[in-house]
Image 1 (cartoon, rainbow, N blue to C red):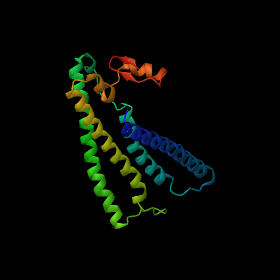
Image 2 (spheres, rainbow, N blue to C red):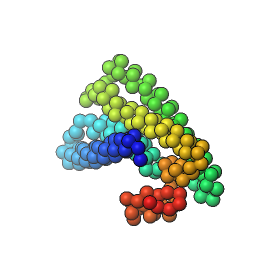
Image 3 (cartoon, one colour):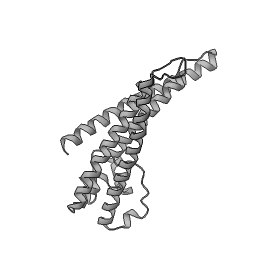
Image 4 (cartoon, rainbow, N blue to C red):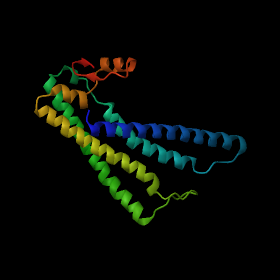
Length: 197
């Protein structure tokens, strides 16, 4: 793996760990709010609002991590029966389609973020949070997802053009059921088209 791979991998792993911790904290806060509301008839401030921000931010960063780990859901009923070259072409097209989806998301997210920033928009709740703050984490997740998907599209298309089909499979290919089961038992190993390393 190159320096870019390691840097992005490290960034995405740290981001999902932070997002996971935020999701757990948010779930705890919402649970405490429900219990206190039921027992004492009082409510914490902003439980729903904060959990919504955390969910949005976590989702955008989870897309990045899932792309790195090849965990996005793909319909591969016929995929495994196709010739290796056809599978590699489908893999390149799949990651290119993800890059297109990411580009659309970033386009609209950028417009929305700049609008919120320029107007100084705040949430219409008692917290009155400046919306650019939670939106920044959400927006950055989509930007990283776009950069990562474009990068994977370029390197997998280049590998395909050079006939390095195993490299395409290793970077963007669908993980077979057998490889997925094996990965659950030995997560340190990486699946490849010809087996495991």
